[in-house]
Image 1 (cartoon, helix red, strand yellow):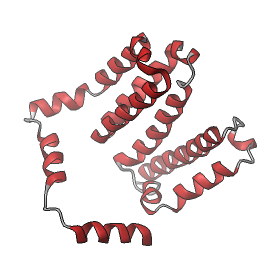
Image 2: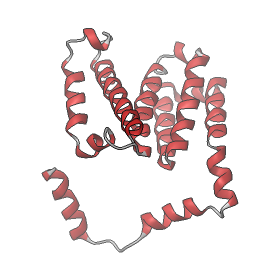
Image 3: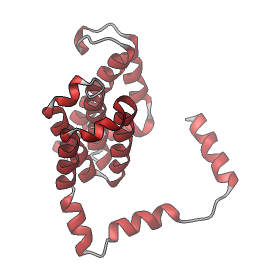
Length: 188
């Protein structure tokens, strides 16, 4: 049990370091984490540390614990791919494909990240990004990584996908549930 706690804590620490670095990059600074005075990095880590759900991920090893660290690394690599020169760097595409594939192994909702990354790349580079061989290598690597998930689900009549679809579609729409949810979010 202690090892599992340490793994969760190390992943949370990695996530905090990556959040700090991402905030500094988005703020415009490129200083290393330990030398930075940047306000954005400190505030971003504080927001993560004060978030009840994200705080729990540092205590318990859940798929989301790994997913948060992977989310930050996917964002980091995606930001690296902003420049036109970076599109020629094969290592960035390989990293992106492997990270998205590992995220897909961690949790199915990572497919949404692939869509967001695609939208970012299209926004920055237009449709010419679709002519980049590295992009298709990343797609292939991500697909290869998730083969175990697809194979297992195929062998079991797509049970986990069916569960997620049924789980997400249960119940009727009620305005008071939405209002209660919004109020609870504001309170927290």
